Image 1 (cartoon, rainbow, N blue to C red):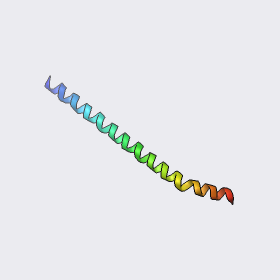
Image 2: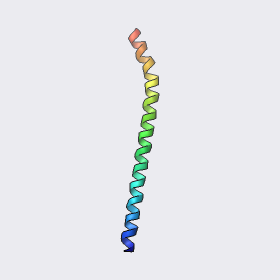
Image 3: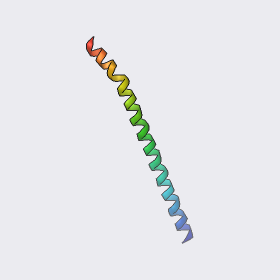
Image 4: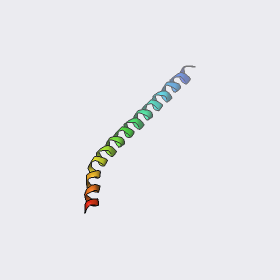
Length: 50
């Protein structure tokens, strides 16, 4: 009983860590895309003008 409970906790922790990593990755990517869009849009408009 004891070992399976410890194994279950380990897997729960592993899944939690993976979810946290995915959330951080999505947040960073979203932030980067926002900044990229803010930088890129004026450049695109400048290119459209010329």
